[in-house]
Length: 201
Image 1 (cartoon, rainbow, N blue to C red):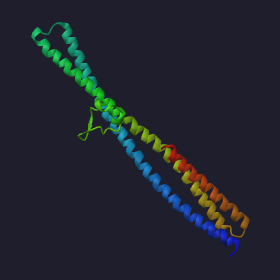
Image 2 (image 1 turned 90 degrees about the vertical axis):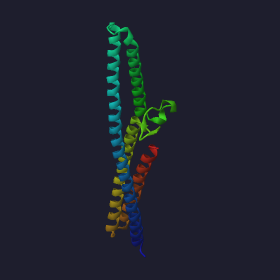
Image 3 (image 1 turned 60 degrees about the vertical axis):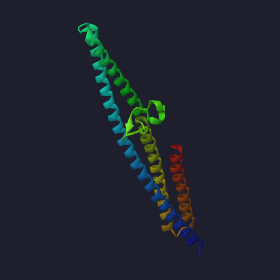
Image 4 (image 1 turned 60 degrees about the horizontal axis):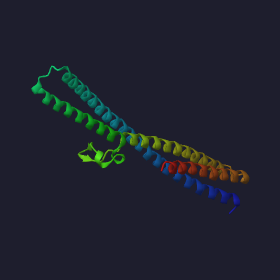
């Protein structure tokens, strides 16, 4: 077997390996894009949930302020003051409850003391992931996808070099150069992918 044939055979095997790696990277990238979509959905959902609690809290604060101002006018009969104070106290408790729920929705159950859990999720306590956590998941995963896409681009370029090396079979030196380019660019592509993955851990 001539040296040129050996280079072609070796180049062909490397191309097959690179195509397999490229397919794997594309599958990984697809899974990560699904993760981004889920994180975005959860972020929007938690934002709406947080805003709903904020609106309820503001309404209760306005109600409390009105009741307190009503008490301060002296227009309420003496026998009704105890009932009015009870309503003010109940409203205050609801305001505090909404504030606690907002904190848990924002930060997540794992980031606050167990005693501070006040919001259930599907009937279970301590299951809130947190608005900020979903945002961080989305941002870090987007960064990883960008890295992997750059790595995929390098792998595609390396395969192109490999194919050119197979086509140019009259010039052994050029074949060797394209094969070397293929291997070098493939290592860069894989390095970019792995660096992006490990930097997000």
